[in-house]
Length: 325
Image 1: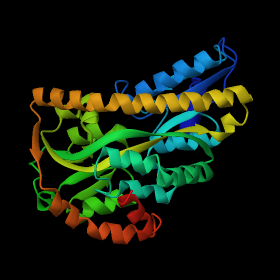
Image 2: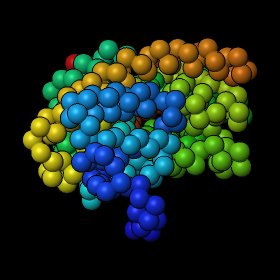
Image 3: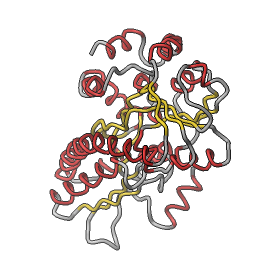
Image 4: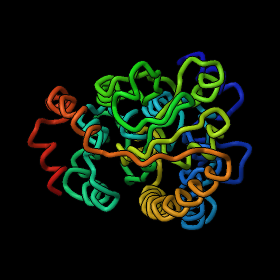
């Protein structure tokens, strides 16, 4: 990590605050792991628009998509050190610091998108947000949405859990997700998002689980064929700001950060639904085959994952609170 930071510092791209060769008093580095066409980029563009307007140009936001500053986890560490200002980080990456965030990674815990938003915008989402602030030493700005995830691969359609037997499926680095895909019979293979395309090309993995937008913008459709509509996960992502950077800022800019964060969250949530629909239509033109599945056998296969990870995510009472929201 230190070598990465040194290299980035040498080319001047990671400072959370910067002066010198800019008309702005403060420069915020904003990172995410999606392609520049991902809805996260739309959210950041709105953040940039609002804060630069409210501060009359005293703040300038530089956006770095596609892991340009590092993986989600590496950028989370950079926020802790104050060497980057903003990150959009999914519940899987967050679970490295905030185990209770893994509750959002339990397969099928959300019935639909409205259910997820009720949970995120209610007491459970607030509790996890507080834990993120405390354990990561950041300022929480809002819950974004990273899409409804399905399983895909280039070997065969996945119509029932046994079809996953022996397949190497890339998953995010969440203990819950690793347990879930192992329980389904796959060989769960965590790796950085930026490594997935090459790993598919080289046969290191057989497939992965993502939303349709990732399949499109990351061009995974070039290296896979079968998408099974498991819909096993609605993935939340947190928009967070470095506490070390925040504490050095004037009060009016601190206020503007929250205004911009709210605007960015609303924009990203609005954009992602339309982009998911467009991605599905695009993928069909590329020869990707989609398969509906009976969810019940998949849900039954991962029931043990809930029991195994209950203590990690806050207990069965916490799980029932989410289910009953």
